[in-house]
Length: 338
Image (cartoon, rainbow, N blue to C red; front, side, top):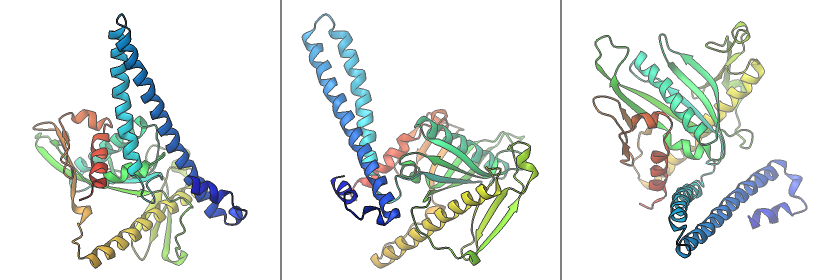
């Protein structure tokens, strides 16, 4: 933080507006961490005083001890959360997250699974105080969504949600099967950082195909009357991005371009990592084909993360957004030297 403040004090600090904005954003994040640390330290001091008083005051010892236990439990959880956030030192970890859910093999069952995951991530985000904006959906024929793209806005949203990138497997007795048979279906989850305007990424306009169409789904009468939805295709890679959330075609186009740049940036970063791995002689995992987590509703209840081994029998709690146990376990594993 001292280094950032020294940079801001230089006479030519504002000569490069983009660099200045990055420095200010970095300083803001650093100050937020310092404030968090000081708050935790203050709470630890208060806890120590409460414990000391409980030992001196016999009459109120029981009540004070109970208060101290409650405060200690909450403090331990917040310290653990703070320590994990310190692990989020990736270049884009502090950014907002763009998440796309895809229905895999399984037809209606897979499309319903996408809708269930959308609800799960929305609940998780809201529980953490993040905001969620649905950007684009392609509805299924009878239920759910074939694809759904949404943005999660808040400090470290990408750092946490990037741990969810991969294939999520559902096992249950399908409500869409008249014979009530058990079905297994999959949904790939794609997570990219929202790079906004801070990262320069050159894209040749000649390499883009831009299509407009009418928005579908629940969006009000006006949404469906004009060709306001936008889909942009990057022809060299085949990567696409779409947005139909806004009523203005211009606004949808800007959002779609932002999503496209984020996806292209992630591809570029993956290619760079692949080159490093090849030089090191490492064997690269085919991450998109790997099963990240299984959600089993029948014949028993269990959610298991296959990377860390963390599992729980409370499937409903997980579907209601209680994902931190899986996210934190992966971050710990990631931060532990192999």
